[in-house]
Image 1 (cartoon, rainbow, N blue to C red):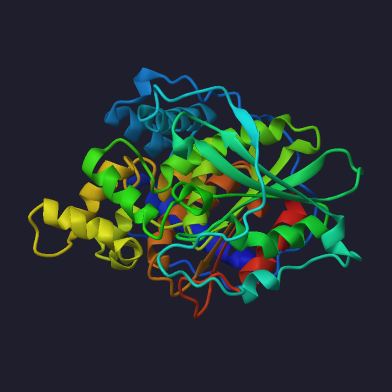
Image 2: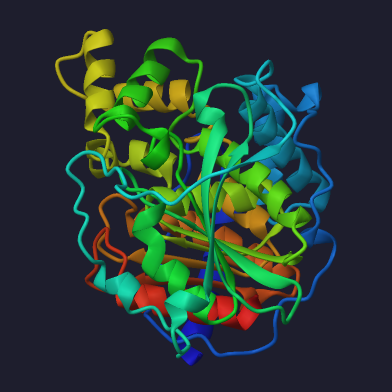
Length: 435
């Protein structure tokens, strides 16, 4: 605890000196903030309140929020610990982007029965063996656990088209007390699928949570071959009609929150969300836009996209989906991928990702809900120097509302882009503490 408080004090000091100079879309570079791994103390759950609700409709939007200038006005004020009205304006702007490519696709949310997947699809030569980190997740000793688990497989229909059919896997204990239980949504990394997360789903279910996982867009049951995700990214670059990198899955997660909030076995005020890598980004943006996600733990997912461009540290992230950027390079007549190519790709497939919705603006909007950021200190895809600005701004925002204990950033020393057993344990303790 003393080390965490000291790190938070440093972050707050940085925020006080850096906030006034921030001017999007070119972020300033803050001083280094390092937080060592520490076990968070157990305490009381977060209390419910107006921030837990989601009164902002996902089917309507405000045109006054769509201009780039108003985006920047709202985000600049909010990043310095702005008002709830300013936060609502930024969320409305993000929803406008989500809606911009599905105005004629919206349908009533419906549920279709599914069945277990016997042969999950992993793309891109992704390793499919056991994950020691996930296997290490704390679990309660329950005799004959497999027999006592209830598994549900179903599809949420979130919009027209084949990608509007969201495969959902849910695990829970076969008991009736309490009637309404807390839920945690788990999100997989690139090229994997919901079945990859089964060790986590089972561990949390053994402890009384309802565990939920989905296949993100163009993954798992939503993929038809080994290149479906990359093909979708290329198509988005060529046609600009979809947002397969982060944003379209966020739409599905808003709809998932609709469904979970209506279930009789779910406590709608206790819905947590977490994910690894791409799944961590999904958790980050879903919690930013939808306040029904009440406890949030992105794992190796938070990064500063604009910082990476301005500091020439975008290569590792680009390499994770490199065929997309190679195609854009060719289309733009470039001999190699450079910062212009990177920026044009983000602008096309995820508008605002490296500007008004980037981490320094969107992460502080999660306040005052409990937020734990878990990263590797040597992660090239999520460089720690690029996290200094969002961390300091978030720390300041939580401090201003008297919720400093509900925000923690941990950069695990010597770890790259990898979810570790320490991260799994920290996430588990965080959910037990606040959810």
